Amino acid sequence: MDFVSKSDIALRLKILFSLIILFLSFPFVYGQLQEEEEKPPPLTRILFVFDASQSMYGRWQSDMKITIARKLLINLLDSLQTVNNLELGLRLYGHQFNFPPQVCNDTKLVVPFAKNNIPEIKTRLKSIVPKGTTPIAYALEQAGYDFPACDNCRNIIVLITDGLEECDGDPCAVSLALQKKGVALKPFIIGIGRNFSEAFDCVGTYFDASSEAEFSKALNIVISQALNSTTAQVNLLDEYGKPTETNVSMTFYDNFSGLIKYNFVHTLNNKGLPDTLEIDPLLAYDIVIHTIPLRRIDSISLTPGKHTIIAANVPQGYLDLKLDARDKTVRDLKGIVRQNGKMETLNVQQFGQTEKYITGIYDLEILSLPRIYVNDIEIKQSHTTTIEIPLPGIAVIEKKASGFGGVYLVDNNELKWVYNFRDNAAQRETLVLQPGTYKVIFRSKYSNRSAFTLEQTFKVESGISVNVKLYR
Figure (cartoon, rainbow, N blue to C red):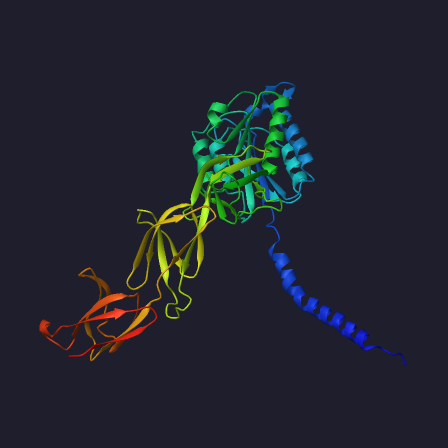
């Protein structure tokens, strides 16, 4: 029989115990890793709104406009075959009814959004026979219904046209409505053959394709901007202009529609620098930094493909509202924090907690009995300002019957209201009061003359209970 030493047994037990601990902790560790997974990138959906009106038969450089536009768009589609996280759709206008007469609802979604539908889009493009008029506004309006509901999508419209609105619609108003509702981002417009910028600048980002080469270049620029996110970083500057502030929530709003686009908690990376964000360069942003008080930066534009540094002055320090360690009576004491000299409430801070504030001067209203007002509190950069109130005392007020009246603080021969008795309360009421001199004024509900009013002065000391008996 093999001999196993006690040390070997102990070692084996130790290894077994470690394996058990590792096994039991795996779900917790795995859950943490899952929580830290990045949010998946949004699905980009590009809808091509393509001009198939009669004028597309017109000659343009080496061939007819329809032939050139079709060929170059098909070439572009071929380059998108392997792009992930992308869906395409195709809407035509001016292709169903001959002109004249003018049919101003001549538009149709011929290829809905789907995965791997590029062959179908190419087939539909090859079969186009230009026929009708140019209802651009109506086509854009209908395009707004082509995007199925989606919580994490970027909806982009690329309008390709060789002419202007011919049906008395207002493409600018339609585009603004789509953007305001958050249906689609600011459209791209590619004008074929001549410069239509004056008419389309209000609709979206306009590209003048005065030649075949310019048309091809415009298509590639549009797709590049549509598909590629741009990097940015937010430098939260301290009082010395250094980007050291962090761990603050930030909300990015679409400057045009006011819709929320991103929420981030600011982070410093492992090099101590503000983390890099990937955000959509097709929008301008209003950024709210959720400090106390908040800071706002409006109309931030990004250049596609270029790293943008956004700076905000948010120097911060700390306010610690501290209770005496011996205090076992106050469980939910709060203080109202306001900027110095203003009445707007910035925060209601719990005692026993420390909170960050932008550096400056603040006023504090402590919701104790009686209330305590502390003004001109200075919050300094990276410094903790501590406010500690005296340990309160307890006043036990005994009455023969319930009644009316209250408790008042005696302050330089002036009575300041603190508390009103409850007319239906018990004959004993217990109040937690700050140290000081008080006066009780009371009349029983069964007394019908003011002359029966009772009053009594008493003193509250820190950590001590006092009994106040309202008897004649």
